[in-house]
Image: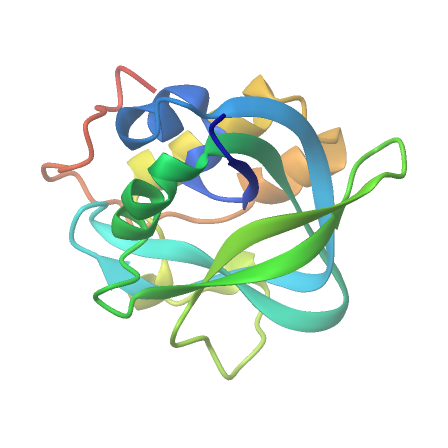
Amino acid sequence: MCKKFLYFAYGSNMLMKRIHINNPTAVRKDIGILKNFRLDFLTHSKRWGGCSATIVPTERYNVWGVIWELHEHNLPTLDCQEGVADKVYFPLMVEVETPNGNVLNCRVYQQCNNPDDHMKLRLLPSHRRPSPLYIETILKGAQENQLPCDYIKFLETIPHNEYNGEYDIGLSLKEV
């Protein structure tokens, strides 16, 4: 029998089409909220043409996302996708609460370097902004999984960097 693990996605991997590119065993289990963390952007991703999302421990903030169940043999592909070997992200285990109150222990990824300052995402300087495709992928994943409307509205306020070059992620803006 194949062992499985739970993974909490808060960025592009919320979109089913995106997570299945490298992790075909992913099955959506639920949505959930990660308490006392905030969503932020810092490290530039060549693949995405802008900064990718991270979570930063911050009291009284919350991050919504999707809880996926994956076969253990997808752990290396997920780590590779998140740049663990390149020290872009590191994995950690967190407690995620589902809308019905269940608390699940999930793997999540946090950037190795996180912003020291805490600014409103809508005021992000251009060098810390995600690309249009990246933010659109996050939004589509949030909508596809019916995250709370107020959280989707929050995501819609995040400015992008207006990048219009090529992407190396297996999806185009048309496919998102």
